[in-house]
Length: 279
Image (cartoon, rainbow, N blue to C red; front, side, top):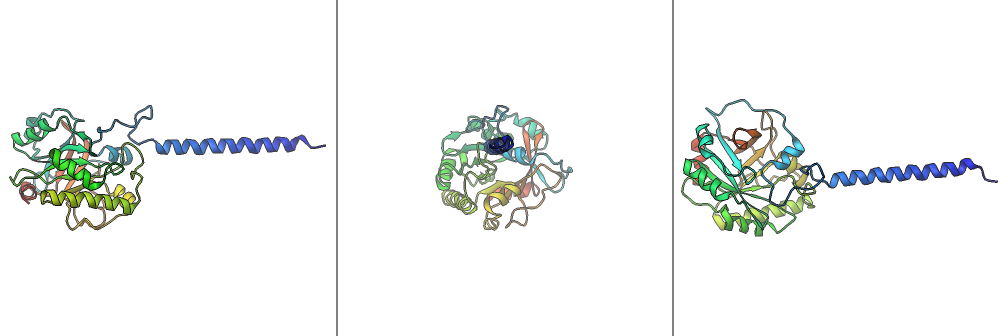
């Protein structure tokens, strides 16, 4: 006659296995939820992404920089439909001299506030440019560059228009690296940058965070010689830069600044901002 304890042990092992599988399933489910998801676990609506959205969710706020704008840096802002219509006079009077406006995302989204933001910043006297939020798991890099240039991301040699920016960062809608290997991501970025240069004659700047760049490109160093770096880090210092860049051109240092939230510093005085716009 079999001992009951053997049945109990078998049952216990099955129960333990079930608990382990359930726990693993929960971990996988949580990993698939974007860091920017709402309380119900839903990913944000397509088109709602903006500069630093993923950086804030993944890296958080680590501090604030000292105020050194007067002598070595120039204050700027970046905006999207997230801010709605912007009171540019308030920003100008507070010392903001340059701005970037989200124009496009992927190959189907255009910022509905683009005209007010892009023209309004120019009319108040700022040097301004446009940025594209990359969706590497969508259309190819060249196709997204074309969409960007055709819908607000072009450059003109008027001394007041900055070159376009590729915003490449944490995926707000899903997997951090958009399901791409490091080599695939580098190839996608290169396709975008090459097409933008072919269309406009300018090298686009790259907006990213060092942590994301290391994780999703393998810390690729090949763009530093040609493409200006806009680093995202909400801390007291810029911190380590991605491979290939010896210095940063712009720094997004906070998402909680006055009037629009996202504030930035150009690594140089206003004449250097003008030099970047002139080309």
